[in-house]
Every structure is written in structure tokens, then in C-alpha cells.
Length: 91
Length: 83
View 1 (cartoon, rainbow over the protein chains, first blue to last red):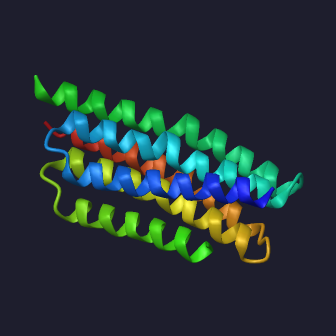
View 2 (view 1 turned 90 degrees about the vertical axis):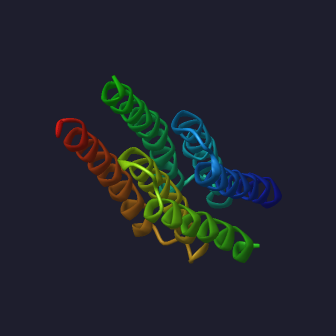
């Protein structure tokens, strides 16, 4: 069971590093947002989902589930508001 | 193994801090801060699980995520209402 958790955690960490490099090196604003959304909505919930395999069913795993729901609700909302503000400031 | 995961996350956080300092306009800086918040949530969760199942670090991560979202929205509203 721990190897499944380790594979999820390491895949999420590698995706976060790829997203950070992409967010640093992309030339345009919208492609930068796309590179940042990978780490926001795939990397961090993958790490949190992999950590559930370590703790089993307890209060810690319920809090990790709430954290996944929070990240999946709040991070695309923040990205949408950011793109909307940039689009309104352009014209 | 935990050393690999933690060092990868710290590398991502350092890259995003560099992106925050050397961003071109205000929106690039805001998205770098947003990404930094997401990575710090993951780092706090990793430490909460592997440091003898410390349950209070996860409360800290929940509060940090909510505060990061609110600060990002407030800063975007301030930056878009300035002109």
C-alpha cells in the first residue's frame, strides 16, 4: 500500500516542479496561466491523494479529503479571476 | 524518499519565489504567489503526515489555503480597480 502512495506523491512533486519551470519560462501570459494550472489542479491534489494511502481511514485522511476539495474549488476560481482581470485590463 | 519529495517541493517553491521577484507585470507576480501557496499547502501536508502524524499541521494547511485564495482575490480586485 505504501508503494502506491509513494508513486502518487513523487508524481505530484515532479508535476509541481514541471509547472514551476513552465510558469517561469513561458513567454506569454496565457500560456503561463496554463502551465500554472497544471501544478494547481493536478500536482497538489495528487500529492494529497497519495498521502491518504499512508494514514488509512482516520481523522487525518478526512482532513486530507477536505483539503483536496478546498484546493479543487479554490484554485481554478483564483485562476479564472486572474485571467478575467487580465482580459478586462487589456481592452 | 521523504527527502526527495521535500527537496522537489522546496525547489518548486524557490523557483516560484524567483518568478515572483522577476515578474514582468502585476498579473505574473500574482499567479506566482498563487502557485507558491499551492506548493506550500502540499509541503505542509507532507510534513504533517510524515512527522509522526501531526494533525494540527493540516488545520494550518486549510487556513493557509483559504487565506491565500482571499489575498489573491483581494489583490486582483485592487489591481483591476486602480485604473
